[in-house]
Amino acid sequence: MTEDSYSPRPIAGWFTPAAIASLLFMGLGCVAYLTHVLADPASLTLDQRAAYLAEPTWVTGANAVAVWVGLAGTVLLVMKRKLAEWVLLVALVAVLVWLAGLIVVTELRENMSANDLIVAIVVTAVTWTIYWFARHSRQRGWLR
Image (cartoon, rainbow, N blue to C red; front, side, top):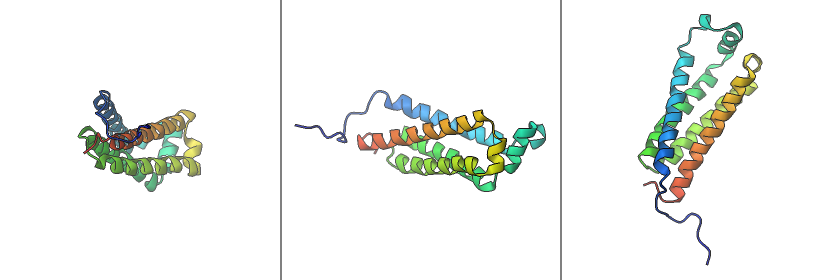
């Protein structure tokens, strides 16, 4: 007899700590976003200023959607709501648009450090993991 891998199961003990960690990560993203958009370009180094000024509005907007919608999605995840999966999917798409912008906008890419790109890739991977966690939780019947 085979077990259905997506059948409802009792909620795992690690669910709440993982959901809270996801919420904290998205909260940190909101702080980073606010720090970015409220920065005074005159206070930045020359390469940071060039990257800041080269960033198109759509890249900044994608970042805003990713962090604020991601925060809402993780709040829903902590509350164990099924809607969290779909809200976090929107955040994941937005973070992918943001990452694509960092890569395809030539002037922005040329003024970013390797560390900036690595951080962007890690943020994208963690956002995907949080979305996967919400999807997994819904499949297990942990969300209502």
